[in-house]
Amino acid sequence: MTSVIRLSRDGLSAGAMEACSVVPPEAVLSGSANETGAMHYESKNGKFLIGTWECTPYAETLSYPETSEFCLVISGKVALTNPDGTLQTFGPGDSYIVPKGFEGRFEVLETLRKVYVLFND
Image (cartoon, rainbow, N blue to C red; front, side, top):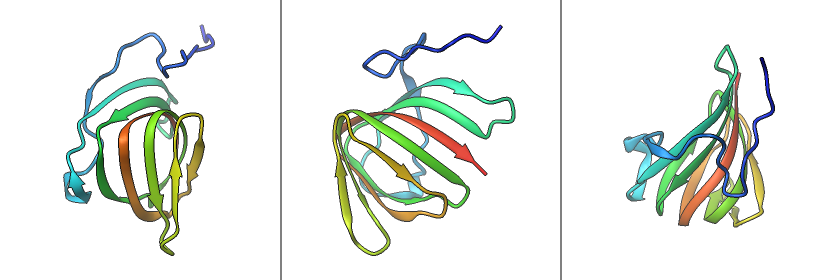
């Protein structure tokens, strides 16, 4: 049986946030990425995922050679720097898309909680 999955305003479904580690240590530029996450949905082929991720302030070089990501910021603040040097900042209620092929800087300015949707080509 397939049922609708409800997400609360804090970005959670049935499960609690658990410790996770998705930030590659070699990509970290500053700070320390203390991460928690909750997976809400994953397609059978593993190419489509929806979850919630929370992390303390840090900065990394972000590279998405095979993935596109949609994010909705629940709390905190994040800044993304495009390859051309333009900077965009996002806070609660903002959303953004990181397209496949993106390479730039990702910096959590205030402990960030976001709901993400990943699509892997």
